Picture 1 (cartoon, rainbow, N blue to C red):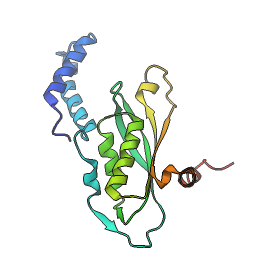
Picture 2 (picture 1 turned 135 degrees about the vertical axis):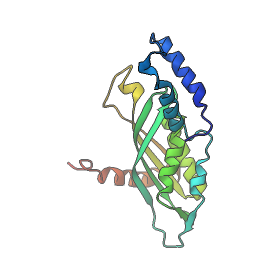
Picture 3 (picture 1 turned 90 degrees about the horizontal axis):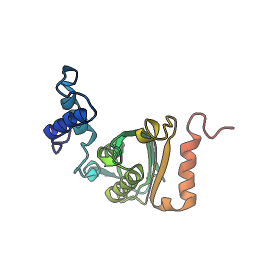
Picture 4 (picture 1 turned 180 degrees about the vertical axis):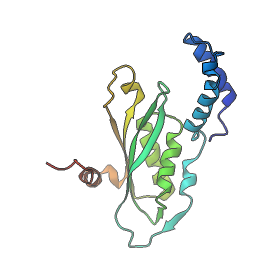
Length: 197
């Protein structure tokens, strides 16, 4: 969890928030709430100030027979929208065309988790993941597709509980429509119920 999160200030802010909505923060019902919220925020924002490239330090050379694509689907994604401080959650699909080196497969979800663990916009998050992988792996191309449901859409305002936002970020060879389409076809064709008539 983030050492940079000031838990005492968060707890004080939660007490003030409870008071502001008309509740008594000294009521025994809320005795543990400020501390619990502070711990939750320390977890939610553990990526603030953390360089995601630390997860890509240990790469492996692959030689000439590297294959054309590394695709990791269905990475669990949880973040907090910077506009309302409400959660958004979903999945990240990350593809890259290797240069001379590849990362261990566990490194990619750690990059996603680090960048998601800060106040975010989904569109920016995808761009940051793509940038980190392009830089950290010197990849010939990166494609990031994020699918997420947002608390600000499902729980307030429009109240569309089933709505999902899909965003995409690409770098290198995957900025070209043909190469990008091949990866998107792989993503949709291999999902149950998708790509079938």
